Image 1: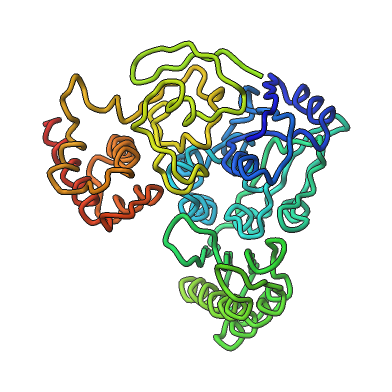
Image 2: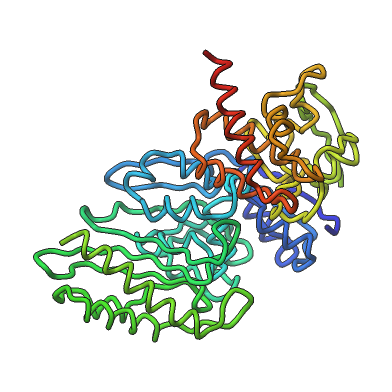
Length: 287
Length: 159
């Protein structure tokens, strides 16, 4: 890596001031599993790294039934896996955590970092989009509360300004009795990015779909909710035909590329097939 | 730009001066001359640089040395005690789980951390646990076998 100066602020305010000062030549460091790779590959040219890990309170991980799950930006994936409320109330987040990287990566990498790096194939966005998470950011210019959809702008482009730090992710409790499925469809069983990522959160009652949520990743420049597909189902009676219609609609909302993992045609087909299966599984379990 | 850090390596506290950009892997191999920890992909994919930091397996190539300040690091050199191999090491040898040996230090450290929190793992759990450690030689079967028998031995030791 090229030489850089590491700064270790003790407060968020101090960190924001530093980031503001350094502009494009500085970046925040949390776990480092993305940042250090970028630096080693010289895909980033930085003179300053602002280490967030000495700031107290950013590693906060708490849960209560009113506010839901509060995840500070230094919370690691392993900490999420070991926090009982995640397993109990946020199974999609649990699935995203257990299919990410390796033990070595999960012990160090953070959920916040996963979001800020904004890879369209990242695991983190899928559960956050489905649970309707909110992101709290701080900067020298003020604080913001951004819904998770607003965070992703494009491939490795987030809505965070240079001097802004994501400090906390708030994940509300999902409504009761919703069924969920998380599918990270990757070529390898571990240590791989999904070629197609699908998450669904489905409510059914008396043979009808209620609140139905579909999140897709790795099939567009941003991870997103397939809102048109959701509308095909919400309030309508459960049938395989309708689920298939929703799956096809979801595929039409995608704009995948061909890359080393899969061709765009394959991705489109897999979005259809896997969305169908995921929703069907949830609907069958619920009926 | 340099910083003085204090790290515990294999039970010994050390005071060293490190450049900000140096990784823990570089410091372990180049400053401390502990060559058991290997540098291969240098980007957190292969696990050959695995060490334990405060008991957790990490890819030392992705840890800045300054972030190890105040922490306890265990490398492969610290696993055997006064020349006596750890049961995990013995089982790796007994089961033929070592060919070229390059992945072995990382495998053993990952295993050590894993077994301390999962004393009676299933085959599936073992395979998942080592999914961050690549082996090009063995095809993993004997490694999984060795870890399973090491688990049994460590359980027996406790009883």
